[in-house]
Amino acid sequence: MNASASSRDSAPEITQDLLERAAVVIKCLGHPLRLRLLEGLEQQREMTVSALQGYSGATQAAVSQQLATLKSRRIVDSRRDGTFVYYRITEPKVEHILGCIRTCDSSPSTSHRNRT
Image (cartoon, rainbow, N blue to C red; front, side, top):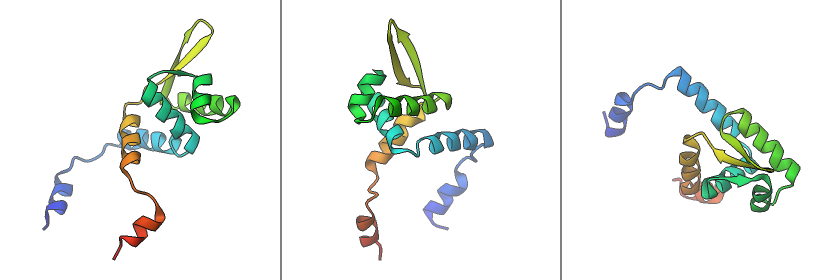
């Protein structure tokens, strides 16, 4: 038995609750604009719709729609300060997922070229 097989055997089983929550988060993150908005929120901690619009280059309607989706899945939350609504990430795993995305080399030409 090799070392990777032995570490897989000793890894704790993933609970059904964790699998279900992970599936919700991963499915919700499967949209480029949502990922861009989360990247902005990760960097700034809190942003308004207009700030996220400037950051992403998307329309106000598109940003609001995607934020509503993220909020309904409890990935972000908002707070009102006067006339402004500030959004922030509430799902702690999102920052880890964004970090994984940054370190992945997903260009098809590179990944196919490196295979033997």
